[in-house]
Image (tube, rainbow, N blue to C red; front, side, top):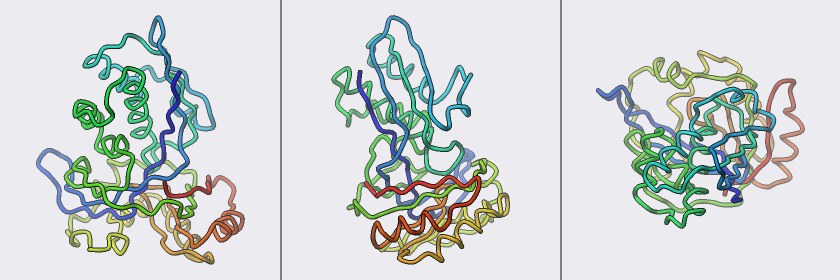
Length: 268
């Protein structure tokens, strides 16, 4: 049995440049990953199976088809390897802007590749990832990177591992499609030389759908020791980077609210 951590994805900046004829949007984003995530275990089996547990298991319970099972089926279609038993511990909230499903699919591909001695940089793995979803290639890479196109065109850049991060989700699921539909259609410019000086162009439409996102961001920004506060992806999860772990821990205690999910972690 092999174990992979499906680490949560953060968009440290997310600039929406244009609507595309294919229905997607042209993006420029800075992907980063934290140490915390879902836990995926894979083992060879006589017949395929998928089991989900954990605090957010109910969101996937009863689903006969999901990104994990699709990733496994497409891996088998290209590389073979027979059937597998897959167990997922779901610790990340769904529809939350931190790539939970995409990270799970990418972790499945990495685990199967390791199990069957496929190189993790095999272009066929990234072709599978791209077909599964726009964030899956970045999650498969699992490193800090600039993403362009739909987010699948990746350029690795130096990261800042070890920086304390507080993730906060106000307990609401936000539809990615609904947020993109509300984007104002204005190109506010590319990523800057320092992408952390950028923005998230989906924050305003996400806040229009779920105003509590604004409350989360304002609460995070008011904490001591914060160096950056932003919403990730299309929301509703927000994050803050901190000067040190003590400041992060103090903030986690101070912003506890009924129904708010929060996790202290670090950039990976």
